[in-house]
Image (cartoon, rainbow, N blue to C red; front, side, top):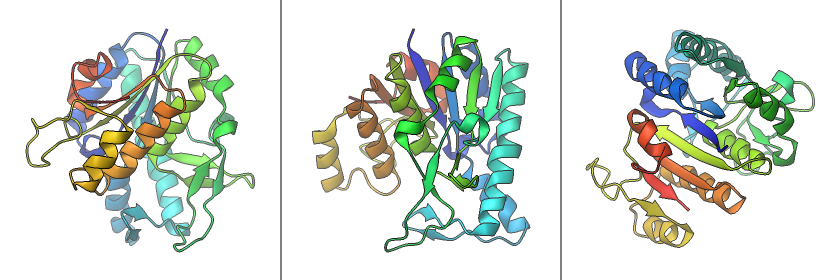
Length: 260
């Protein structure tokens, strides 16, 4: 049976009603499934209350020590456990994991090049603990992964949730057929960012390059699509990108943008 690796992020995570609706749909999905969640906006809000101002370079968060402590609390605690608790209420036997739990997501601290991103982890792809994830889904459990990875020295590291979803989907594709689904607040990749109905139905590496060159795809959508294309090239059957409200249709390919 096909494994669904689903990433939830964007404005859905910090909207209680939208998140609840999404989690109800996720809970009802048949077959094996893994959920990866983000939560940067909530981390920023709570950080500001604690006097920790966010610092970004090219849209990527710089993770100093206070920020690392913040995201461990918010991602690994508050958000992860609230999502797991909601899924239990909706009849889905979920288990929340950070990269440290079962050493499921080993990583290395990102090397300093032109920018020092601080305590940010780059996943060691070949060391993703696929046996643990396979065992959990075979027991009808749904792993819920926070965007935190683990280095060899026993430190948690902040890691982009899109990247984690791609790494997990790619690793699991060696064991079973996998579909990767990115859910956020847009109906897919849009030809016109102001028109929610201008969804581009399918993208491949050639059309991606053209859309970037023409300025249709820009900013944060570029790394999301690069992750999606990498996943497909590495053995993931299909990647869908679209609105969290349309999760059911995304999985069947009746909504959103298909990356193939």
